[in-house]
Length: 263
Image: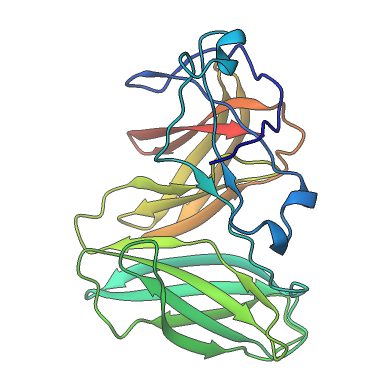
């Protein structure tokens, strides 16, 4: 019921064409001091108007009461030293075959594979123990979900040690429908790297470019992809100016573009 302004007026904003309509994009980064467990369930909304003076007039301002953001602070303690390098998956006879790799393992770990049928609520699909091969630069793991996929399924990996310290992977989505080449997920906005998932119907190579809003190519890279969902990234983007960018992915004659915001 009671709201407090936490920024000054942002704008005026310029519209961008998203391929089907004009849209306005704005962003705000919550300071770390306001992301502690005591701020769990804090709510955020954006007020818009045609002029700065109209922002203070309840008859001339507007807000989306449906899309109010509720802050969810999860205190996982000190994070693990081990890093998840990759997380991919594909369907084989309607069963999800998941693959992931780690680096920097120094202690016994457990990997909980969590599944969701709606992309929101997750349950434990199974667990895998670590290789305990601490001398290896990279350790590789796999898991086959015994429950078949009907429609779509979302997966994520939760990595835990004996003290229950944890790290969580990105989420990937698998579908037993017609698998076509597509970008199935992007992390948007992005900061120091662009993270995205590509669905490929076959093994092969793709070309990826990060393009400025005025059409200048900022980054280019080729990737080897495998049948299923591939987690990919463009690194070292922290020095790029804030603003809108285009992520362009090319597979043979197919070109797919997504608009991204750099914070």
